[in-house]
Length: 293
Image (cartoon, rainbow, N blue to C red):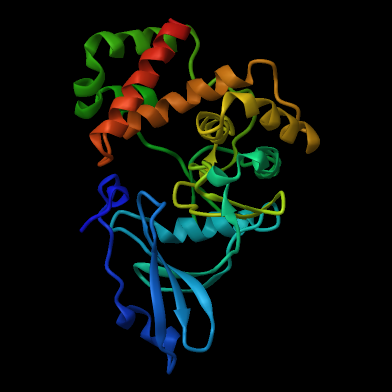
């Protein structure tokens, strides 16, 4: 029977096939392959081998770019704790297993997560775009020179969920004060910096996982993601974390973060996520329009 978690995914979960990593296994046997259910896109298994080794097998969906995933992860190493990549193939990769509790279950560690995010934003790039394995940047292409917001508002799924009046309201808000308003150079953006991708232990971050959406861009994207998943009572901890790293946030940081996070909510409406989740996105977009119209 499929779990509720499985139904709310971007891509179908791939079954575990030991033959896929036969060369890495050698003479060792797989004692257990436990699905890690928190991810919404890739398929992850925690594997325990007969010699005691434990690692995470990551099975990539067809449209993924695992080479970009690896490139961004290596850039982040040294700034934040990340898993080591032990081996990889065309559609899979093996990562070291990191002990820890997801931030979603330990919100008291929000400040530590913000400190890690502040360190990520210190890695700057000359332009925004996808980070290629050779370190070059491929500019985003949303078609005909349009911005991401222009392009996403024209997608069928968005119009079906929010309707033409809300689409027009968002265009008007964007015309008054564009979402991409940061005066900072592009930096390393995780792209999915939410509490299920951040491991903590003893008050510190032990791992930042799932780098498939990483790119060079606006740090307010990650801030918006963290803000969205953090209790308002802990928003001050986000500010404190950045200040502790020597990068105090401006007074309007929440507004900037929400304006950039709007793009994520719109993109969710075009994904394979479950309808109840999309309905929550529509409610968030409605509140956004009320605040900034």
